[in-house]
Image 1 (spheres, each protein chain N blue to C red):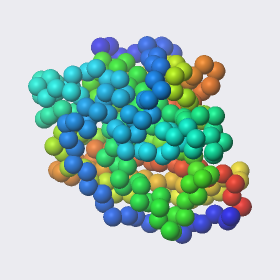
Image 2: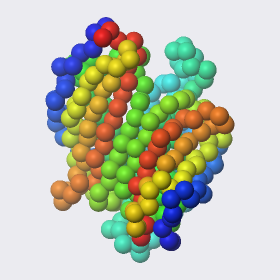
Image 3: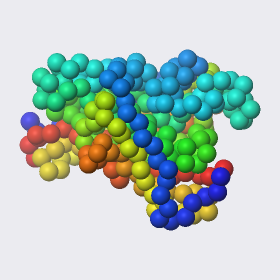
Image 4: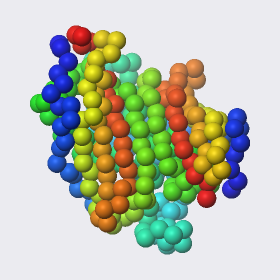
Length: 131
Length: 148
């Protein structure tokens, strides 16, 4: 796996979380905030329906960054994100990005996670160390 | 409601989490990984790990128990109804494997008003049973509608 050059796009990933993904993520993560798993509660607090966990979407960003370096979890050194929108189950999420800095084996990606025009995570910065 | 800043600088008792194989598998599966290092101990060992390794973002599992009580601390007085998760930063060290005992300590780094919102910045530091740093994290929560 060779290191990248500045401006190069990453492969990214596309995934459509099913209706019950937030329930499984709640179980896996321990975050049972009802806005993610109870439609009536979500609507009572003004949301259109249940929304995905932000840290689930960040998990997809981390997966895309790690897989870009060949999949070894040791490759991901740092990841920071800003949460900027809500995301829903049953709609495709696309993680995309490009290299903004390449310093030998260490590469910094700028990443976005979006559902269509809705950028759920932007200004994500991942530092990957190529093996 | 005026912004309460009593918690700035406060630290909370460390939280211990024992990492198990099935929890790693459950987390890796929900994110959609198929890399065998997250599921199969032999594959993990062949890749140089002691046992099944956790994806880096598994930090949300072992550090969540440290962050939870902090948000309910009366000195923090978090207004959950108006709270959103604003930003998140992780820096990883040693990999986390099944069998590890992870200890996470939390500090409130800052609470400040900006544009009518309250910004709450917490830092967690997680170490394994050998005292090696596995993850340092900054968690930023934003509360809408505060008085400045």
